[in-house]
Image (cartoon, rainbow, N blue to C red; front, side, top):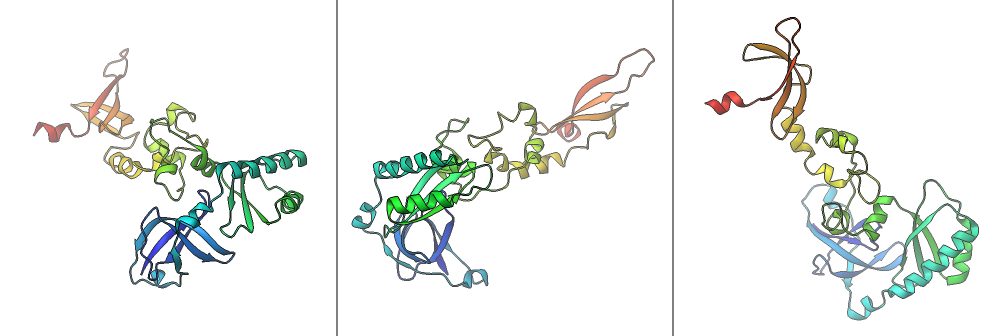
Length: 271
């Protein structure tokens, strides 16, 4: 079964819809029916499934590709900013510990979904009541993470390129300090290995498996080794160079230990 991955807002989940008789491509806008009514979404990808039980699940079909008049109904930046400004003022008046990020208008115009970030749970019941009374529509508030905020408002990363989360990352994976340690960049400090969102950079996951594989070819730190007849112990790794730092024991009393860098593949290279 071939299906389309559709998203209604940059910070929203990605939903799967069957194509039915509709032909779509990545980047197209489509009209679909959800549990909350008709919605206009953007196709992120068209996926060719297989015959597994996972792909045999029932999916709602895409009703049709969006037409010009459908896309024209998307609220203008000015209308969105007006709604956000009123919501910000109301949040401030209630003294709620939340930062407003974005708002999504439903295709039928009867619902508004405000996205916000907060360090904890927020009791926004009174806020919802006032927003509903002011806008005359159903109001929903969705708490998102700082990485979702960067995806919406971010620009370029320290590499000088557009943020990965804005360009091609559709789902966030877990980025751990272990990935930074494996790539020997922890010493740079958290500021230099964190993205605009304040979390560890997503790109740390791209080469993690490669670094793990290369690190596995090096003797573990603490391994006792013999280098050209001198005894020592491995005290450091240089993964990309495939070398290790070895501390050679002093041969005579009063002499100092020697630190050298050894290529683990040097014997193969001599051949």
